[in-house]
Amino acid sequence: MAELIWRLRTRPGAAGRQGDLWWILVVGGGAAVVLGWALTLSLQAACAFVLVVVVLALYQHDRSWGIAALFALWFLVPGLRRILGTITGYVDNDPLSLAPFLATGAVAALELVRFHIPSRIRVVLLVAAAGFVVGLPIGLVAGPRSAVYAFVAYLAGVAGAVLGLRESGSLQDSILRRVLLFGMPPIAVYAILQNVLPLPSWDQAWIDASGFDSIGIQEGGDIRVFATLNSPGTLAALLGLSLLCYLTIHRARLVTIAGAALVAVALSLTFVRSAWVALIVAGLAHVIASNGRSARLVLGTGAVIVAATLALAPVSSTANDVLERFKSITDFRGDTSSNERRATLRETLPTAAQAPLGHGLGTAGEASKLSGDSFLRAPDNGYLGLMYQVGPIGFLLVMAGVGIITAAAWNGARARAPGQELRLLLFAMLVYLLVLLTAGDEFYGSHGVIFWFIAGQVLAYDFRRRAASGRGLVLGWRSVSR
Image 1 (tube, rainbow, N blue to C red):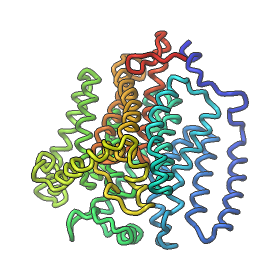
Image 2 (image 1 turned 135 degrees about the vertical axis):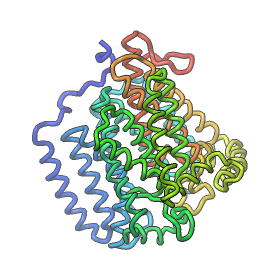
Image 3 (image 1 turned 30 degrees about the vertical axis):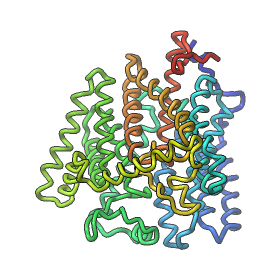
């Protein structure tokens, strides 16, 4: 009965016919050849077109393959851009950087065409999306290119919720979990090699061209690894999510231990302290939501990581550097970066709060580089960056949606019903990203798509559960009925 109420039914003729894959590959391949010939002066644009077509073709053939390819696109495109940059030279406003956003929007559009989303869930997503829209008009005045780019980027993230709505409730069938379990160890290997071997020419050329000073811990010291991603912070967040997924594997096979070890080592080499803080909070949230059942696993895993770091510190300079970074977490007054973050928050928050509609989308974060430099180009606080762009009104709209999603995630994680282990994982991952928002913009890029993808899964289960019990989705103190 709940499935009938859910109404996520395939419309007549929407199911892929046998042979669709070959038809799409032939047409898409032919179009890519034509485009590549027409765009010989822009190899990046041709590659972007081909990659988007491949993702759509895989999605048409098999939804799981398509969504897995979409996540792979987010994880690998920055590295591909660096490789192509050594061939053609680095391109300002590289069109290849748009490929993941376009692919996400295109796949979400196909989902919307094929499946009906209940209005109760649409309300939540539209409220959150409206928060970003608030900052668009002023952003278009302040810097049209930055505003449009930021608008597309944030809405592409929200579109991830559409992809998560039809996810399976089984832990073993979770696409996101599989991608993070099997996709991150190879990326972690690349990251470790960046630390122990000389940097590949494309990575070194990118650092030199971009002037990314924060890669190095100190002159002549180890680098903060970034693998195929575009920064240590971006990589660290994904590695942390992967470690949370490894907590759901109960049979400690050699390949599992090896994969988790690679991910943990790579995470430590990013030297991103906020990722470890977020992991600690997410682990505690998992233990609380499970009524203590996961305490042995979560605390035991944490103890092993700490013990290994302490054991290696005397003989490994890298391990000692990692240990020193851990120690600095509690040194709020003496740590330079912590002091700078607090100063930025103290100086910028009043300015952000006094502009009801914000200073405009694109005035903070990566999009700001299209209109010139911004003192919030790399915001150390995602909440602050959001409020600065969309003001208190937009901020409250986005946070209202996030609040509803978090409450639904908590209720789902607590519900003793089939699929609870997956819902516990989703809740922990959501808490992890919300904590990371205090150190960066987790609504942007791959992190944003994953955040809203999880939100879609959470809202889907909450809707089914409440529909089965004859209740509506509660928004605050009111219930929205269809």
